[in-house]
Image (cartoon, rainbow, N blue to C red; front, side, top):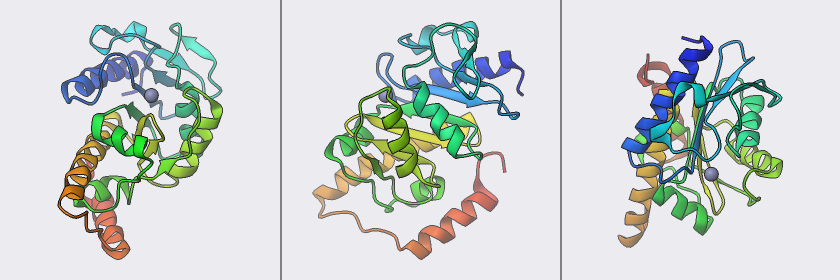
Amino acid sequence: MNTLMEMRQAVVETGRQMIGRGLVAGTWGNISMRSQSGEQIAITPSGRPYDQLTPEDIVVVDPAGQILAGRRPSSELALHLAIYHARTDVLAIVHTHSLYATACAVAGKAIPASLEEMVQAVGGPVQVAAYALPGTVELAANAVAALADRSAVLLANHGVAACGPSLSEALLVAELVEKAAHIHVMAQQLGGARELSEEDVALMRRFYLEHYRPGK
Ligand SMILES: [Zn+2]
């Protein structure tokens, strides 16, 4: 993969899957993919419904955010560019406002490392980035700091950013973060979640990266 049109098509398909999996309502959220060369980033446009997007609607920018094709990129372009800049291992980002993860983000509560499949895919708890207004470089910097070397971060009062080496994995991470947040909220009603030990989290993460990751 990696002709520009293939990248744009893959972003469109991931948008449809994101709706199908109930991770997004309306036009909120956004998706991007970086080419192997790092020279191009394909990102969803601003304010367009996902089920009506065509590959031509997907905007292509360079790492500095200059538009190479298409019209108006997502208002969260700065967030995507900052994560790509900080994390050379990341080739795709899925940003959602999914319900339970956003509940945690609104409450300012990290999602603890308590669900096995989430810690395998994320690498530990999902931290909450310090608040900043949407679309700002401050939001992007706060998100990168709280993301660290993991695969997901909560954006305070806003939503989730999930990332990975492919669109399918970034979408999987977004789904698992939502599932873990839902289970975390339910576990609170049962007296609270029991967290996994850091040792066990590290072991499961290594197993996932070496043997279990999609495409392995
Ligand atoms: Zn958002």
